[in-house]
Image (cartoon, rainbow, N blue to C red; front, side):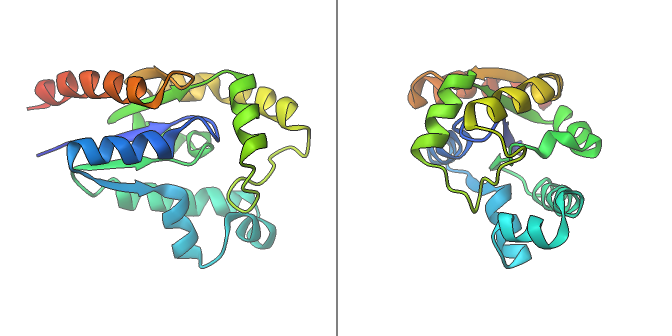
Length: 176
């Protein structure tokens, strides 16, 4: 039985890019909780939040994570705020979960280069740098608290993947 790899971290930390590459290297399926949620809700995240509110969105996000956790042998990229819900942190802390950590400026630069407003709605209405700083400060302990590994999201993608793969090998051996 092959364990899932869960990737957590702030918006634009590289979860999807790293996740796709990891899945390819390991010949595993790749899932992005945001993409699964959009299909399930039949609308973009921004529209869903506007119509139903953040609490409803977080509930649907938890439902999607629970469904994906039933799969075996997948790389799962989680939405940036998935750690807000305690039930999600509890699930993630029992799995091989990687926190892809990047500094405020790196994240802000990436968000400015590819804002993708439908998938990445503003959480505070503040400037990108201020929002990223505020959200990271609020979530840092949540991310690190349920992570098996903290990877440097500022490093080249290949290096991040190699670090995760090395740790995953040890995790998988200890699980048998």
